[in-house]
Length: 311
Image (cartoon, rainbow, N blue to C red; front, side):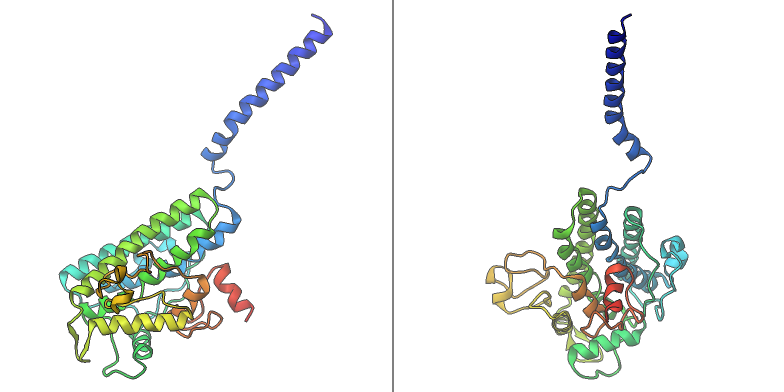
């Protein structure tokens, strides 16, 4: 065989090997979890919601079952401190059933996020009745007596739950346009779907009772939701991104109804919030740089901690 023919065959063999590698390498990388399907720019945005997911998980689990993640799925806490003040609520059977489902759904959310990105330890959460009482006091601009206790009965717990999933829902809506990879968007879509469902169930249960008086305050359920939504708008320092169960007709769907079982804009699309706006609300003070409220030591993750570092 001539030298030139041998060289030519060697070149062809190298080309074939390279072609096969090009075909097989992506599958090998995927099967062996080498590399990442989530861009670095997406990681922080996907990790930030863990703060709200931890809050929802613990509130729902404790409210329905009397215990939380440390018993249900301790590995998902990543060593973070247990929540303060959470306790079992005095719930009727149907409410306990629904809230139990919500709690375990949130466990799945934590697992799904941590499977996609590294995540961080559970932040310190304050779920004491006094924190909820403080929110209601701020919402009404005055003391109400006795102080609001979310764990007192089913109606109180549903009103307190009105505080929780909707904030996370608006965060997911606000995050969506900023994600780059299909894997990131797929995860967010799945999370948003269930968060929206939880919020819809809570609002529907409250809407059914909108004219009911919340004892012993002589204040209707509808007014509670209106005041809470107004407070979140003020704390977030935004225009209307939050609405109660009853609104002026011009703010209702197509300007035709005052009933507002779902909160949405003039095109009946969900409102969105930025991480800073969310922190202002859950810290309870309108300042993303000052921890408080449900997060006495601040939320975790690079986005939340960046505000504290730059304070």
